[in-house]
Length: 123
Image (tube, rainbow, N blue to C red; front, side, top):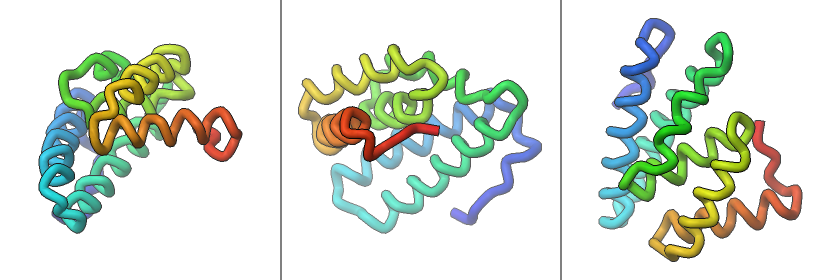
């Protein structure tokens, strides 16, 4: 899993890869495979950064994923879209927080607390 350059990758393919890598990440999180989890996290970040850098900030393409059946996909789509669709993203984080699903429900609680306190300012 080398770092990829996503410059020439179509946006629809980036969204597919975002979903794929997070579904895999969710599975390895449940298996406590931390090194693999971290590699998937880096790929996810590269995809989000590429979407953000595109004209018009294509992170908006992640908004439909706020209702995805994967907790990981919903959580990371919500975090990535906080500046694009803050109301929908926060609502998704609140639903995840109430689920207490490990680890994403707890991550959602932490993210909401960090937003409220000003420790985390999305960009």
